[in-house]
Image (cartoon, rainbow, N blue to C red; front, side, top):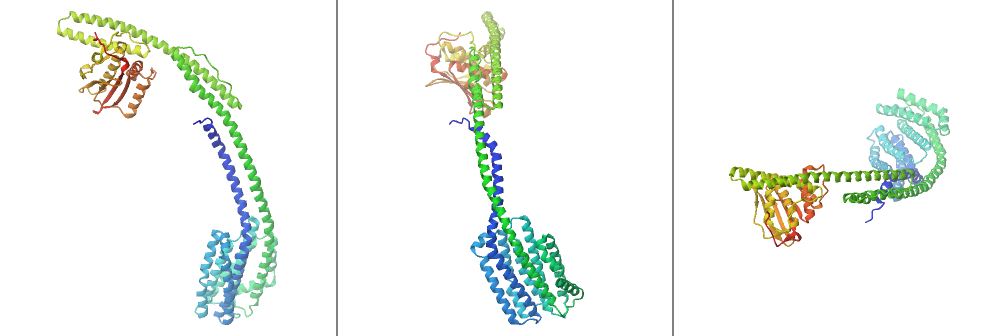
Length: 623
């Protein structure tokens, strides 16, 4: 599958994705805010006609029922008037319940308003118990009034969640008008309590405490709400506050709180109540027309944030994608040039230099694009030129080091060959057993030194000087290999099949087997034996060298097998693996397959598969 351009494009896309997503989120946030305001505007009519107006009617009827109930408890009203008012209350509450619980209204109201409705209906369930107390006349006035108060309070808490005007200033004015409605409700409670006691009466302890609390609460709520109203909406209340009716009622409140005695004439209470009802209705009528301009402004915001914002968002995305495509193309060209340099040009240069061939310097083609891209292209060409010079110098140094290795190894090999010849002559003349044993040990030591000298020649890429013209039996090859190992006495060569090795491969195979055997003796306990066995297969001859050491961890074993199979280039810094490099190079030269695997005895088995192409039938003994 062609992955050209994908990583760069993905990275650029990811880079541009952050601002694009941020822009989308900002647009979504702005659109959701304005859309939410628009939805609230659509909900206003539904809530006003199905919740607000029916609930206000129900509250008014409950206030009247509370008044008649308080009077009935103190024999200030007859039962027929109370029953008639209860019928009106039940009708208003039933109409409100039917409209508020309709499916279309429930889909419109939010979760918080739905909770407030549920709370109101739960409080409304206490109404029959309150009526039963009134009918039995077994409860005091304050307790009955408190029962109605809790029902009406839950309605006012519902009003708090019904203010849906999106304009902040209108919202604040609406909250203040609602607070004045609560002050009016407290006034209705005062009226009910005073009417129940009647003119000329005296408040009891509980009644006096409740009335005093109502007076302070109403004044505080009115004062706070008036402070937040603007001049136009506050004007009716200012006129009422400076009127004689307001002063008369305020004076009545103060005297009742101070003395507990009610005046014989309670008409100021009804007159003040009528004025408050009129002013409250007037203020509501003044507030409603303000909603329409705010709604128009919200609709304009929706059009701007939703329409123009969406257009700008689409343009931004298109421009970003176009920029990403152009930048991806430029970076793709730069990446292709770098890949060609790393995967084609430099490896081809190194391969030619390793083979000793001349490698002419080739410049990279010019890279078009932004100035920064062109600068990177020039820097890449400079890297190519530096790498070319470094590769040439390294090849020259490697050839020089190889020549030094070969020269020194050839000299040592010549001296060691002369030393072996002289030792053989001395062995033939010597008759003393002890001296002859010393000469054999020197001979074995010199043989090992010759193999180490040949290692340098092999690692330099040259071939050792010794060789055979005719085939040699494999038994002699294995014995000769074991003879070049220091701890040869621990090595046991099992019977060998009747096979011979071509003379041209004898020296390399002896050296290869000797390196493997010596490795087995070095990395296994000195009291253990190293077994060399061989077997003819369909593809050649298998030689297995098995030790009983501690073994090699699997990751390291895999790495060694990879090096043996790939025949890596000799690394001067890896001096601990000289034998491994020698085996790999000899195996590659003769087509021998070498692999290491765990031994059943806990050590390592080195398996060398000698191909049938270098085996022969005629054989001569190694001299």
